[in-house]
Length: 444
Image (cartoon, rainbow, N blue to C red; front, side, top):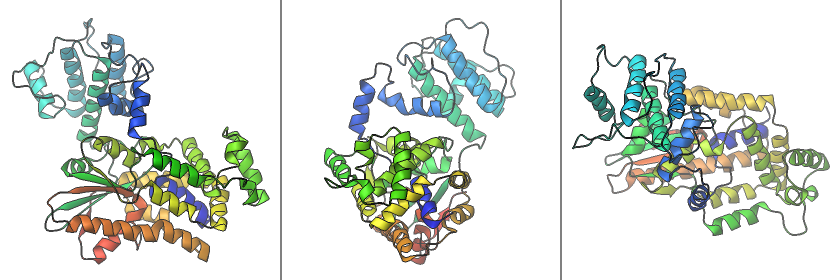
């Protein structure tokens, strides 16, 4: 696979945020305007349960209504299938209560996890298990409203908690690429991100989640949840060619012919695809390629943690969207056209590379991941310039940022999330920190 072609694929999935960001305010407003939308507190769990493949069309509707026995049965059976157990739903159930839900889910967990050898398990024992494992909130008065009904969105959230709990207990969670580095005062957790996934990377390893919980703030390449109108206007202006200039005037006829055909296939109109700069046109096509491989930026690792942190932990930016788009806009015409040409030729080999990256990221196999990402080196001066801009310069800046967090006069811990590729290779963040004398430990 040619260097530039491989670089385009790698950047999309492991190096930088390439998808169009929407502000949290816009997302909230869009969600609130939909009559079938879940409450904000339940929205992420609703999405994740869908990603896990549990539920049907009726599951994801009527969120605030009382869950029906039929809806519950779908979720119940989804857990049975996911964990290959055969517990049958109580045939005497007619009206579903919270107590029924707790008991039925405990029966599933008991079979899968072998929680108790006792044939008769009291309600009190069941409740204490759920409370001790933080699947239910403890109540000092002991009233868990077990005889009351439960809403559909509450049912979905509870099902997702049970799914995650069983996944962790059975060691089926995803390892990922995760390191820790400390100084005398604090610890910085280093998570390598895959910016676009199919959702199969969740739930993440409990060490990763513990690091997130232990941190006072998270740091990401760019905050994609909150983009100001000024940022949006700047990016839109940057990605468009100057007035009176069209893309066919700045790229070869051969590349343009292929680009036009592909753009029309994607449903773009001439007044749009002809005005895009080549580097941005490359992003548009490559995002379509990711979608064809069932990968989405909305399920990316950094997006996931930004949603978890939103409203509860500060989200700090190491670079920002402007920096990343300025860098891409800074490539010369030859480099930008080369990116576009390689985006047009993404094929089975590109899909195989994506699969290799995902497989080795999930298992935390950094040796194989490093080989897949960096086996081919830049050859021409033009390729070396692109590689330095995307990897070298940014790696150094990210390393300096992490050192500042470590040297800060504070006991606060931090959770840093950048593309997995930035931690690897001889000039990656891990090597940079180790050269400075820090001990960087990978979680396996």
